Length: 451
Image 1 (cartoon, rainbow, N blue to C red):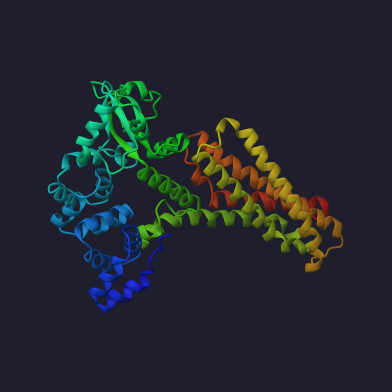
Image 2: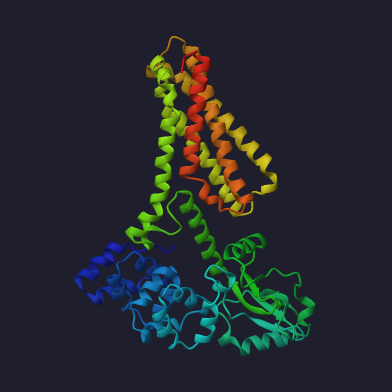
């Protein structure tokens, strides 16, 4: 298995200024390893490494990198050099890289590229749409040709075909998509058989405006390695291939995770300090306000704490366990919605299952903590009552947490609001307030303490 190189070793070589040693060290790496190495370096170190590579290999390394970082590298090059590197890449990869570059530089680079027309067409589509990530180089044949004729046509057009061919798309005289045949079917079918006799007519396709997340979900559901893109007349425009589908799945998963944590939508290394501060501060403000709300809501229980000081010892564990359950439930729901596993027409059953899990775990851990409480020095005139408060307080907190954590993302999704924003500070704050209020209310009932 290829090992990602240690960037510190290469940084030492760069600082030593020994270009021969750097070239010999890089020669032992493949393009994926070089890309992983370059992504961890400073701009100056990136340029030093890349300038030791031949032009064609430099292009392959850029294709293996994250588009944001590849765009930063390209933006530091003169337009002629940038164009010579980008001309060796697939059109969809070039469009993704150029989409991150400012307009003036983009105009200068496009004017020097061979496929500027195709690239301008791709750049015209929304960034996160099927059109924005598709390749215009799709293998296509006419529906009236035979297997032998289709094979000969593909051989003649080999230089214009994409680097990886998974399916051959069959079109009619108006270039409308009518069928698809896999590469395996093409090479195993009899040469004189018409292609329309063996092609599949039940097609999975998307339009250029389809959101990239929907494209990735369709590919995952139907186990496809490529999806054709058509216009409103069903004319074949291009194809979204597996490399872009994997990138989309990774991007969307990363985006959901960061949103759930209140950290924005992009990784920290892709944002400046100021941008990261602006993204995170509103979420932390929400958490701070939530904490103040918890403090205000508990103001009426000072007498209960003075009467039974042991109650204070278990406030953190009741709130903490509830918060963990709320985060678990909300994470499961958000991810289930994202991959189509959770359907909003089954809200009752899904929430009931989470509530049952919360109650079961609350009883288990609540009883265990209640039994351990005397060993921690938590005593009271009514030890049985204190044990019941701890046990059922934990049950109530975890049931509330499971209910809130499961229902809020599902309800938001029902109203077409991104469910990923329902987690983090909002769910935790709601669970803290409701769980601790229930805990103290239970104490006033079972321990007969006044408010």
